Image (cartoon, rainbow, N blue to C red; front, side, top):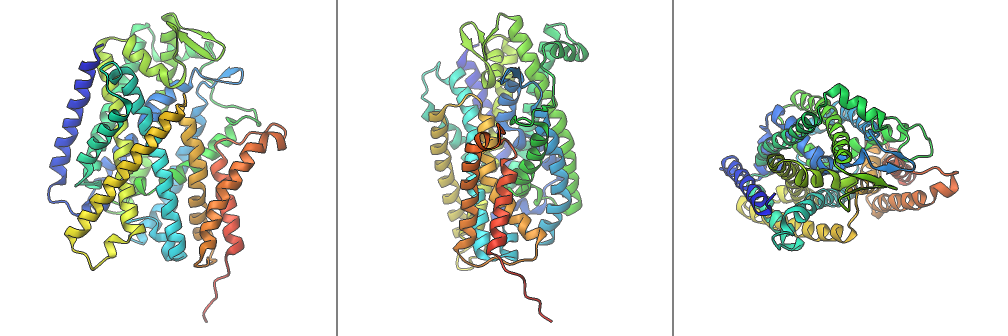
Length: 503
Protein backbone atom coordinates (compact mmCIF):
# COMPACT_ATOMS: atom_id res chain seq x y z
CA UNK A 1 0.00 0.00 0.00
CA UNK A 2 1.50 3.35 -1.04
CA UNK A 3 2.43 5.50 2.01
CA UNK A 4 1.73 8.62 -0.06
CA UNK A 5 -1.84 7.48 -0.76
CA UNK A 6 -2.45 6.71 2.93
CA UNK A 7 -1.01 10.10 3.86
CA UNK A 8 -3.41 11.76 1.40
CA UNK A 9 -6.33 10.19 3.26
CA UNK A 10 -4.93 11.53 6.57
CA UNK A 11 -4.84 15.06 5.12
CA UNK A 12 -8.33 14.69 3.65
CA UNK A 13 -9.70 13.56 6.99
CA UNK A 14 -8.14 16.55 8.74
CA UNK A 15 -9.69 18.95 6.22
CA UNK A 16 -13.08 17.42 7.02
CA UNK A 17 -12.49 18.13 10.72
CA UNK A 18 -11.57 21.71 9.92
CA UNK A 19 -14.81 22.14 8.01
CA UNK A 20 -16.81 20.85 11.01
CA UNK A 21 -14.85 23.10 13.36
CA UNK A 22 -15.51 26.13 11.17
CA UNK A 23 -19.23 25.46 11.17
CA UNK A 24 -19.48 24.93 14.93
CA UNK A 25 -17.12 27.65 16.21
CA UNK A 26 -18.76 30.69 14.60
CA UNK A 27 -19.90 33.24 17.19
CA UNK A 28 -18.24 31.20 19.95
CA UNK A 29 -17.04 32.76 23.20
CA UNK A 30 -15.25 31.63 26.36
CA UNK A 31 -18.44 30.01 27.66
CA UNK A 32 -18.72 28.02 24.42
CA UNK A 33 -15.11 26.89 24.80
CA UNK A 34 -15.41 25.80 28.44
CA UNK A 35 -18.91 24.23 28.68
CA UNK A 36 -20.55 24.55 25.24
CA UNK A 37 -23.03 27.12 26.66
CA UNK A 38 -24.71 24.12 28.40
CA UNK A 39 -26.60 23.36 25.18
CA UNK A 40 -24.96 20.08 24.10
CA UNK A 41 -27.24 17.27 22.95
CA UNK A 42 -26.92 14.31 25.35
CA UNK A 43 -27.03 11.71 22.56
CA UNK A 44 -24.15 13.37 20.70
CA UNK A 45 -22.15 13.64 23.93
CA UNK A 46 -22.76 9.97 24.78
CA UNK A 47 -21.72 8.75 21.34
CA UNK A 48 -18.72 11.08 21.10
CA UNK A 49 -17.48 10.05 24.54
CA UNK A 50 -17.01 6.50 23.23
CA UNK A 51 -14.22 7.75 20.97
CA UNK A 52 -12.65 9.76 23.80
CA UNK A 53 -12.73 6.82 26.22
CA UNK A 54 -11.49 4.24 23.74
CA UNK A 55 -8.86 6.28 21.89
CA UNK A 56 -5.98 4.81 19.94
CA UNK A 57 -5.07 2.64 22.91
CA UNK A 58 -8.22 0.54 22.59
CA UNK A 59 -8.04 0.59 18.79
CA UNK A 60 -4.47 -0.73 18.67
CA UNK A 61 -3.47 -2.05 22.10
CA UNK A 62 -6.58 -3.95 23.29
CA UNK A 63 -6.70 -6.30 20.25
CA UNK A 64 -3.00 -6.88 20.78
CA UNK A 65 -3.50 -8.18 24.34
CA UNK A 66 -5.51 -11.23 23.23
CA UNK A 67 -2.60 -13.31 21.95
CA UNK A 68 -0.01 -11.72 24.23
CA UNK A 69 1.34 -13.74 27.12
CA UNK A 70 1.24 -13.38 30.90
CA UNK A 71 3.35 -16.14 32.45
CA UNK A 72 2.69 -19.40 30.62
CA UNK A 73 -0.74 -18.56 29.17
CA UNK A 74 -2.19 -15.99 26.81
CA UNK A 75 -4.01 -13.00 28.29
CA UNK A 76 -6.93 -13.81 25.97
CA UNK A 77 -10.09 -11.86 26.94
CA UNK A 78 -8.95 -11.07 30.51
CA UNK A 79 -9.11 -7.35 29.73
CA UNK A 80 -12.90 -7.79 29.81
CA UNK A 81 -12.59 -8.11 33.59
CA UNK A 82 -11.53 -4.46 33.63
CA UNK A 83 -14.45 -3.58 31.33
CA UNK A 84 -16.91 -5.08 33.83
CA UNK A 85 -15.39 -2.77 36.45
CA UNK A 86 -15.76 0.17 34.08
CA UNK A 87 -19.47 -0.60 33.69
CA UNK A 88 -20.07 -0.53 37.46
CA UNK A 89 -18.05 2.68 37.78
CA UNK A 90 -20.19 4.56 35.25
CA UNK A 91 -23.32 3.95 37.34
CA UNK A 92 -21.57 5.38 40.41
CA UNK A 93 -20.66 8.48 38.39
CA UNK A 94 -24.20 8.86 37.06
CA UNK A 95 -25.95 8.68 40.43
CA UNK A 96 -23.40 10.10 42.89
CA UNK A 97 -21.05 12.52 41.13
CA UNK A 98 -23.25 14.02 38.39
CA UNK A 99 -26.00 15.16 40.83
CA UNK A 100 -23.29 16.87 42.89
CA UNK A 101 -21.82 18.68 39.87
CA UNK A 102 -25.21 19.86 38.59
CA UNK A 103 -26.36 20.97 42.03
CA UNK A 104 -23.31 23.24 42.31
CA UNK A 105 -23.60 24.42 38.65
CA UNK A 106 -19.89 23.82 38.07
CA UNK A 107 -17.82 24.88 35.08
CA UNK A 108 -14.85 23.04 36.52
CA UNK A 109 -15.58 20.01 38.70
CA UNK A 110 -12.67 20.95 40.95
CA UNK A 111 -14.66 23.93 42.21
CA UNK A 112 -16.35 21.33 44.43
CA UNK A 113 -13.09 20.99 46.36
CA UNK A 114 -13.00 24.76 46.92
CA UNK A 115 -16.61 24.76 48.11
CA UNK A 116 -15.95 21.84 50.46
CA UNK A 117 -12.39 22.44 51.70
CA UNK A 118 -11.02 25.74 50.47
CA UNK A 119 -8.45 27.05 48.04
CA UNK A 120 -5.54 24.70 48.84
CA UNK A 121 -7.51 21.49 48.18
CA UNK A 122 -9.02 23.08 45.07
CA UNK A 123 -5.63 23.97 43.59
CA UNK A 124 -4.19 20.58 44.58
CA UNK A 125 -7.01 18.69 42.85
CA UNK A 126 -6.64 20.81 39.73
CA UNK A 127 -2.89 20.24 39.69
CA UNK A 128 -3.29 16.47 39.88
CA UNK A 129 -5.83 16.54 37.05
CA UNK A 130 -3.42 18.54 34.90
CA UNK A 131 -0.61 16.05 35.58
CA UNK A 132 -2.88 13.02 35.11
CA UNK A 133 -4.52 14.11 31.89
CA UNK A 134 -1.28 15.40 30.36
CA UNK A 135 0.49 12.09 30.93
CA UNK A 136 -2.49 9.92 29.92
CA UNK A 137 -3.41 11.89 26.81
CA UNK A 138 0.13 12.10 25.50
CA UNK A 139 0.66 8.35 26.05
CA UNK A 140 -2.44 7.66 23.93
CA UNK A 141 -1.39 10.21 21.34
CA UNK A 142 2.12 8.79 21.13
CA UNK A 143 0.79 5.31 20.37
CA UNK A 144 -1.15 6.40 17.29
CA UNK A 145 1.49 8.86 16.05
CA UNK A 146 4.08 6.09 16.32
CA UNK A 147 1.94 3.75 14.20
CA UNK A 148 1.51 6.47 11.54
CA UNK A 149 5.24 7.12 11.68
CA UNK A 150 6.34 3.50 11.30
CA UNK A 151 3.87 2.48 8.60
CA UNK A 152 3.54 5.69 6.56
CA UNK A 153 5.83 8.60 7.33
CA UNK A 154 9.15 6.80 7.74
CA UNK A 155 8.73 5.60 4.15
CA UNK A 156 8.47 9.16 2.85
CA UNK A 157 11.31 10.48 5.03
CA UNK A 158 9.38 12.53 7.62
CA UNK A 159 11.09 12.56 11.07
CA UNK A 160 9.04 11.56 14.15
CA UNK A 161 9.47 15.03 15.69
CA UNK A 162 7.94 16.68 12.61
CA UNK A 163 5.05 14.18 12.57
CA UNK A 164 4.20 14.86 16.21
CA UNK A 165 4.47 18.62 15.78
CA UNK A 166 2.27 18.72 12.67
CA UNK A 167 -0.46 16.55 14.24
CA UNK A 168 -0.54 18.78 17.32
CA UNK A 169 -0.83 21.84 15.07
CA UNK A 170 -3.78 20.15 13.34
CA UNK A 171 -5.49 19.62 16.69
CA UNK A 172 -4.78 23.22 17.69
CA UNK A 173 -6.35 24.54 14.50
CA UNK A 174 -9.74 22.92 14.95
CA UNK A 175 -10.03 23.37 18.76
CA UNK A 176 -8.64 26.90 19.04
CA UNK A 177 -11.97 28.72 18.86
CA UNK A 178 -14.86 26.36 19.54
CA UNK A 179 -13.51 24.21 22.39
CA UNK A 180 -16.20 21.91 23.84
CA UNK A 181 -18.82 23.26 21.43
CA UNK A 182 -16.74 22.00 18.49
CA UNK A 183 -15.48 18.81 20.14
CA UNK A 184 -18.98 17.45 20.81
CA UNK A 185 -19.48 17.32 17.01
CA UNK A 186 -15.99 16.30 15.91
CA UNK A 187 -15.90 13.47 18.48
CA UNK A 188 -19.23 12.17 17.16
CA UNK A 189 -17.84 12.12 13.62
CA UNK A 190 -14.60 10.48 14.71
CA UNK A 191 -16.32 7.83 16.84
CA UNK A 192 -18.40 6.87 13.81
CA UNK A 193 -15.31 6.37 11.64
CA UNK A 194 -13.44 4.50 14.37
CA UNK A 195 -16.24 2.01 15.04
CA UNK A 196 -16.88 1.58 11.32
CA UNK A 197 -13.20 0.76 10.81
CA UNK A 198 -13.29 -1.89 13.54
CA UNK A 199 -16.50 -3.52 12.25
CA UNK A 200 -15.32 -3.62 8.63
CA UNK A 201 -12.05 -5.30 9.69
CA UNK A 202 -13.96 -7.90 11.75
CA UNK A 203 -16.36 -8.70 8.92
CA UNK A 204 -13.60 -8.93 6.30
CA UNK A 205 -11.42 -11.33 8.31
CA UNK A 206 -14.40 -13.53 9.26
CA UNK A 207 -15.56 -13.66 5.63
CA UNK A 208 -12.05 -14.29 4.29
CA UNK A 209 -11.50 -17.15 6.74
CA UNK A 210 -15.02 -18.58 6.22
CA UNK A 211 -16.01 -18.03 9.83
CA UNK A 212 -19.28 -17.05 11.49
CA UNK A 213 -19.46 -15.42 14.92
CA UNK A 214 -20.14 -18.81 16.50
CA UNK A 215 -17.33 -20.62 14.69
CA UNK A 216 -14.96 -17.74 15.46
CA UNK A 217 -15.62 -18.10 19.19
CA UNK A 218 -15.26 -21.90 18.96
CA UNK A 219 -11.92 -21.62 17.12
CA UNK A 220 -10.61 -19.04 19.58
CA UNK A 221 -11.72 -21.23 22.48
CA UNK A 222 -9.81 -24.22 21.11
CA UNK A 223 -6.68 -22.05 20.99
CA UNK A 224 -7.35 -20.87 24.59
CA UNK A 225 -7.85 -17.27 23.50
CA UNK A 226 -11.28 -16.62 25.00
CA UNK A 227 -10.98 -17.14 28.75
CA UNK A 228 -11.99 -14.06 30.72
CA UNK A 229 -11.59 -14.69 34.44
CA UNK A 230 -8.16 -15.10 36.03
CA UNK A 231 -8.45 -16.87 39.40
CA UNK A 232 -4.77 -16.65 40.44
CA UNK A 233 -4.94 -14.35 43.47
CA UNK A 234 -1.25 -13.46 43.20
CA UNK A 235 -1.53 -12.41 39.56
CA UNK A 236 -1.90 -8.78 38.50
CA UNK A 237 -4.84 -9.98 36.39
CA UNK A 238 -6.76 -11.66 39.27
CA UNK A 239 -10.44 -11.04 38.48
CA UNK A 240 -11.39 -9.24 41.71
CA UNK A 241 -8.41 -6.89 41.34
CA UNK A 242 -9.34 -6.17 37.74
CA UNK A 243 -13.05 -5.57 38.37
CA UNK A 244 -12.57 -3.40 41.47
CA UNK A 245 -9.60 -1.67 39.87
CA UNK A 246 -11.55 -1.03 36.67
CA UNK A 247 -14.41 0.45 38.68
CA UNK A 248 -12.13 2.93 40.43
CA UNK A 249 -10.21 3.65 37.23
CA UNK A 250 -13.54 4.76 35.74
CA UNK A 251 -14.46 6.85 38.77
CA UNK A 252 -11.03 8.49 38.68
CA UNK A 253 -10.39 8.81 34.95
CA UNK A 254 -13.97 9.75 34.04
CA UNK A 255 -15.90 10.96 37.10
CA UNK A 256 -13.03 12.99 38.55
CA UNK A 257 -11.61 14.07 35.20
CA UNK A 258 -12.40 17.54 33.87
CA UNK A 259 -12.11 16.41 30.24
CA UNK A 260 -14.81 13.74 30.51
CA UNK A 261 -17.05 15.65 32.90
CA UNK A 262 -16.69 18.88 30.92
CA UNK A 263 -18.72 17.23 28.15
CA UNK A 264 -21.28 15.79 30.57
CA UNK A 265 -21.94 19.06 32.37
CA UNK A 266 -22.34 20.76 28.98
CA UNK A 267 -25.64 18.85 28.65
CA UNK A 268 -28.80 20.87 29.45
CA UNK A 269 -29.87 19.09 32.65
CA UNK A 270 -28.96 16.32 35.08
CA UNK A 271 -31.51 13.81 33.77
CA UNK A 272 -30.17 14.03 30.22
CA UNK A 273 -26.60 13.85 31.49
CA UNK A 274 -27.42 10.65 33.39
CA UNK A 275 -29.05 9.17 30.28
CA UNK A 276 -25.86 10.02 28.44
CA UNK A 277 -23.69 8.21 31.00
CA UNK A 278 -25.81 5.04 31.19
CA UNK A 279 -26.20 4.77 27.40
CA UNK A 280 -22.48 5.33 26.99
CA UNK A 281 -21.59 2.62 29.53
CA UNK A 282 -23.71 -0.06 27.81
CA UNK A 283 -22.31 0.76 24.36
CA UNK A 284 -18.77 0.78 25.73
CA UNK A 285 -19.09 -2.79 27.05
CA UNK A 286 -20.23 -4.02 23.63
CA UNK A 287 -17.52 -2.09 21.78
CA UNK A 288 -14.73 -3.40 24.04
CA UNK A 289 -15.93 -6.96 23.47
CA UNK A 290 -15.80 -6.37 19.71
CA UNK A 291 -12.23 -5.08 19.97
CA UNK A 292 -11.25 -8.24 21.86
CA UNK A 293 -13.00 -10.33 19.20
CA UNK A 294 -11.05 -8.42 16.54
CA UNK A 295 -7.85 -9.19 18.45
CA UNK A 296 -8.61 -12.91 18.40
CA UNK A 297 -9.37 -12.77 14.67
CA UNK A 298 -6.11 -10.94 13.97
CA UNK A 299 -4.11 -13.64 15.72
CA UNK A 300 -5.99 -16.38 13.83
CA UNK A 301 -5.37 -14.53 10.56
CA UNK A 302 -1.65 -14.09 11.31
CA UNK A 303 -1.23 -17.73 12.33
CA UNK A 304 -3.01 -18.77 9.12
CA UNK A 305 -0.58 -16.70 7.04
CA UNK A 306 2.71 -18.05 8.33
CA UNK A 307 3.10 -16.54 11.79
CA UNK A 308 4.39 -18.73 14.61
CA UNK A 309 5.13 -18.32 18.29
CA UNK A 310 8.71 -18.28 19.46
CA UNK A 311 8.55 -18.13 23.23
CA UNK A 312 6.47 -15.05 24.00
CA UNK A 313 6.97 -13.56 20.55
CA UNK A 314 4.79 -13.97 17.46
CA UNK A 315 7.03 -13.97 14.41
CA UNK A 316 5.67 -13.18 10.95
CA UNK A 317 8.17 -12.81 8.09
CA UNK A 318 10.97 -12.11 10.57
CA UNK A 319 9.11 -9.48 12.63
CA UNK A 320 7.67 -9.78 16.12
CA UNK A 321 4.08 -8.54 15.70
CA UNK A 322 2.73 -9.38 19.14
CA UNK A 323 0.99 -6.69 21.23
CA UNK A 324 0.51 -3.22 19.78
CA UNK A 325 1.93 -4.22 16.36
CA UNK A 326 -0.55 -6.98 15.46
CA UNK A 327 -3.38 -4.77 14.16
CA UNK A 328 -1.41 -2.16 12.17
CA UNK A 329 1.04 -4.72 10.77
CA UNK A 330 -1.73 -7.07 9.60
CA UNK A 331 -4.02 -4.32 8.29
CA UNK A 332 -1.36 -2.47 6.33
CA UNK A 333 0.72 -5.37 5.02
CA UNK A 334 -1.55 -8.40 4.66
CA UNK A 335 -5.09 -7.10 4.07
CA UNK A 336 -6.48 -5.54 0.83
CA UNK A 337 -5.80 -1.88 0.06
CA UNK A 338 -9.36 -0.84 0.84
CA UNK A 339 -9.08 -2.36 4.33
CA UNK A 340 -5.73 -0.60 4.84
CA UNK A 341 -7.37 2.74 4.05
CA UNK A 342 -10.27 1.98 6.40
CA UNK A 343 -7.76 1.05 9.14
CA UNK A 344 -5.88 4.35 8.74
CA UNK A 345 -9.11 6.37 8.87
CA UNK A 346 -10.21 4.42 11.95
CA UNK A 347 -6.81 4.92 13.53
CA UNK A 348 -6.70 8.68 13.09
CA UNK A 349 -10.35 8.81 14.21
CA UNK A 350 -9.12 7.16 17.40
CA UNK A 351 -6.20 9.59 17.62
CA UNK A 352 -7.93 12.96 17.62
CA UNK A 353 -10.69 12.47 20.27
CA UNK A 354 -8.15 11.45 22.90
CA UNK A 355 -6.07 14.56 22.23
CA UNK A 356 -8.49 17.35 21.31
CA UNK A 357 -10.66 16.86 24.39
CA UNK A 358 -7.62 16.62 26.66
CA UNK A 359 -6.07 19.77 25.22
CA UNK A 360 -9.35 21.66 25.65
CA UNK A 361 -9.96 20.33 29.17
CA UNK A 362 -6.43 21.16 30.31
CA UNK A 363 -6.80 24.67 28.94
CA UNK A 364 -10.15 25.01 30.73
CA UNK A 365 -8.82 23.68 34.03
CA UNK A 366 -5.73 25.88 33.98
CA UNK A 367 -7.69 29.00 33.01
CA UNK A 368 -10.55 28.45 35.46
CA UNK A 369 -8.83 26.68 38.36
CA UNK A 370 -5.22 27.81 38.38
CA UNK A 371 -5.37 31.43 37.17
CA UNK A 372 -9.04 32.24 37.79
CA UNK A 373 -9.56 33.64 34.30
CA UNK A 374 -13.37 33.48 34.27
CA UNK A 375 -13.63 35.39 37.56
CA UNK A 376 -11.17 38.15 36.64
CA UNK A 377 -13.35 41.22 36.23
CA UNK A 378 -10.34 43.42 35.36
CA UNK A 379 -10.02 41.80 31.94
CA UNK A 380 -12.27 42.27 28.93
CA UNK A 381 -13.74 39.24 27.14
CA UNK A 382 -11.21 39.76 24.34
CA UNK A 383 -8.27 39.81 26.80
CA UNK A 384 -9.54 36.62 28.42
CA UNK A 385 -9.78 35.03 25.00
CA UNK A 386 -6.16 35.93 24.18
CA UNK A 387 -4.92 34.49 27.49
CA UNK A 388 -6.91 31.31 26.91
CA UNK A 389 -5.30 30.93 23.48
CA UNK A 390 -1.80 31.36 24.97
CA UNK A 391 -2.56 28.64 27.53
CA UNK A 392 -3.98 26.38 24.79
CA UNK A 393 -0.84 26.75 22.69
CA UNK A 394 1.42 26.22 25.73
CA UNK A 395 -0.23 22.89 26.53
CA UNK A 396 0.31 21.81 22.92
CA UNK A 397 4.05 22.41 23.45
CA UNK A 398 3.94 20.37 26.69
CA UNK A 399 2.18 17.57 24.77
CA UNK A 400 4.97 17.56 22.19
CA UNK A 401 7.65 17.19 24.87
CA UNK A 402 5.78 14.33 26.57
CA UNK A 403 5.26 12.49 23.26
CA UNK A 404 9.01 12.65 22.62
CA UNK A 405 9.63 11.19 26.09
CA UNK A 406 7.31 8.25 25.34
CA UNK A 407 9.14 7.74 22.05
CA UNK A 408 12.36 7.49 24.00
CA UNK A 409 10.81 4.93 26.42
CA UNK A 410 9.40 2.94 23.43
CA UNK A 411 7.29 0.37 25.33
CA UNK A 412 5.54 -2.38 23.29
CA UNK A 413 2.23 -2.26 25.21
CA UNK A 414 1.23 1.30 26.06
CA UNK A 415 -2.07 0.34 27.70
CA UNK A 416 -0.22 -1.14 30.70
CA UNK A 417 1.73 2.10 31.14
CA UNK A 418 -1.47 4.16 31.06
CA UNK A 419 -3.22 2.02 33.68
CA UNK A 420 -0.16 2.11 35.96
CA UNK A 421 0.23 5.88 35.64
CA UNK A 422 -3.50 6.36 36.31
CA UNK A 423 -3.08 4.57 39.63
CA UNK A 424 -0.48 7.05 40.80
CA UNK A 425 -2.02 10.26 39.47
CA UNK A 426 -5.77 9.76 39.94
CA UNK A 427 -5.47 8.20 43.41
CA UNK A 428 -5.11 11.56 45.22
CA UNK A 429 -8.17 12.90 43.35
CA UNK A 430 -10.14 9.84 44.44
CA UNK A 431 -9.02 10.40 48.04
CA UNK A 432 -9.88 14.12 48.00
CA UNK A 433 -13.35 13.72 46.50
CA UNK A 434 -14.30 10.69 48.62
CA UNK A 435 -13.12 12.47 51.78
CA UNK A 436 -15.32 15.42 50.89
CA UNK A 437 -18.36 13.32 50.02
CA UNK A 438 -18.26 10.73 52.83
CA UNK A 439 -17.06 12.82 55.78
CA UNK A 440 -17.96 16.17 57.28
CA UNK A 441 -14.43 16.94 58.47
CA UNK A 442 -12.48 20.05 57.43
CA UNK A 443 -8.97 20.30 55.97
CA UNK A 444 -6.43 22.97 56.95
CA UNK A 445 -5.71 25.79 54.49
CA UNK A 446 -2.01 24.92 54.36
CA UNK A 447 0.65 22.94 52.54
CA UNK A 448 -0.32 19.80 54.52
CA UNK A 449 -3.12 18.86 52.10
CA UNK A 450 -0.80 19.01 49.09
CA UNK A 451 1.89 17.08 50.97
CA UNK A 452 -0.52 14.23 51.74
CA UNK A 453 -1.56 14.07 48.07
CA UNK A 454 2.08 13.89 46.98
CA UNK A 455 3.13 11.42 49.67
CA UNK A 456 0.42 8.83 48.89
CA UNK A 457 1.65 8.04 45.32
CA UNK A 458 5.24 7.87 46.60
CA UNK A 459 4.20 5.32 49.24
CA UNK A 460 2.27 3.39 46.57
CA UNK A 461 5.34 3.18 44.37
CA UNK A 462 7.43 1.82 47.26
CA UNK A 463 4.67 -0.67 48.16
CA UNK A 464 4.19 -1.83 44.55
CA UNK A 465 7.92 -2.34 44.05
CA UNK A 466 8.19 -4.60 47.11
CA UNK A 467 4.75 -6.29 47.26
CA UNK A 468 5.81 -9.60 45.69
CA UNK A 469 8.70 -9.95 48.16
CA UNK A 470 6.71 -8.89 51.22
CA UNK A 471 3.42 -10.68 50.55
CA UNK A 472 4.40 -14.10 49.23
CA UNK A 473 4.37 -13.35 45.52
CA UNK A 474 1.32 -11.07 45.52
CA UNK A 475 1.61 -8.44 42.76
CA UNK A 476 -0.18 -5.10 42.84
CA UNK A 477 -1.95 -4.41 39.58
CA UNK A 478 -4.84 -2.19 38.59
CA UNK A 479 -5.99 -1.94 42.23
CA UNK A 480 -3.09 0.49 42.73
CA UNK A 481 -5.46 3.45 42.23
CA UNK A 482 -7.71 2.24 45.06
CA UNK A 483 -4.73 1.79 47.40
CA UNK A 484 -3.49 5.27 46.47
CA UNK A 485 -6.95 6.70 47.17
CA UNK A 486 -7.17 4.94 50.55
CA UNK A 487 -3.72 6.21 51.60
CA UNK A 488 -4.71 9.75 50.55
CA UNK A 489 -8.00 9.46 52.47
CA UNK A 490 -6.15 8.23 55.59
CA UNK A 491 -3.62 11.04 55.37
CA UNK A 492 -6.34 13.65 54.96
CA UNK A 493 -8.18 12.22 57.97
CA UNK A 494 -5.05 12.57 60.09
CA UNK A 495 -4.55 16.26 59.23
CA UNK A 496 -8.28 17.14 59.32
CA UNK A 497 -10.40 18.40 62.16
CA UNK A 498 -14.06 18.06 63.11
CA UNK A 499 -16.58 20.57 61.85
CA UNK A 500 -17.67 22.80 64.72
CA UNK A 501 -21.46 22.85 65.04
CA UNK A 502 -23.03 26.27 65.44
CA UNK A 503 -26.15 26.22 67.64
